[in-house]
Length: 334
Image (cartoon, rainbow, N blue to C red; front, side, top):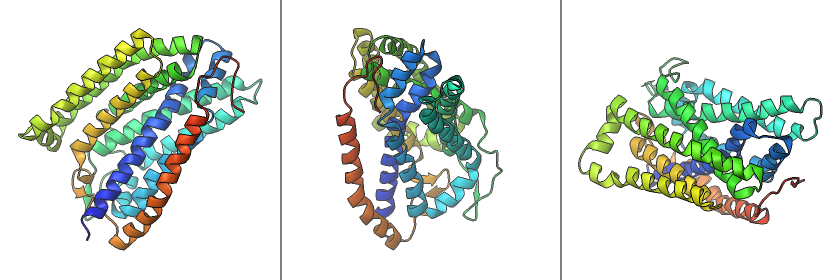
């Protein structure tokens, strides 16, 4: 097997997941903050800020799942049965959220129900994405290259804690998105929410960073043995420094910098998870090379990806440039 093909595909999957977490994270976060809006005008303004983007943001989830199926079919056949229930719950929550997004604008007497569906779908989708992350990091029982655990192996305190952490994280990135994209009461309230959520997110990140090496010796060996300890120590230090900058920018009334600072926090946390588990694609036992498809299949799909990925990225950049600027009260995209 060509050794570098699984590495390339694992990097592509990592990029797809990172793009999804950042892009769909802020509009799920907006939904998490939705119940705290003071008026229907503010809620309309919040939804208008993501209206041109939210459905396109979710396509990265398709690339992540499809890429895993195509490039690492053995990993797909193990991970999906292990995490089947939280995957289904997450997808159902995304469906409710999507339907509510479209129906809320045309509903009159039932608008409050669609508000509940929108906020609930956003919150549950974020929660179960965190549960999926926790269930994946803690490891999957494998025997003879097949899932050998039970249907509720994922349901652990660590996974649920990760679920709440992702809800807080998405709420934070949703808040700084609203700071950047809205004006008036929506922006003021979002800035206040961001100041509350930033310390909460740091606490979640800190607890997970301590919990994982204590509970999983393989992760402790990765982070706390020499020379890795010296190479990896800057990551938490840079995370704390960047969080301080985000806090400072929020207090200074900055509008754009907090959003990009929070993206940096997300990527640093994501890097930490990658360092903890790579090269395992099915922790703790199966690597990217053991679960990879045949080289011919990987090359065939890679050719199409090389051509299509720049087009997708260019289209996304164009859409975000086209709908740049702030959404004021009473404005919207139709």
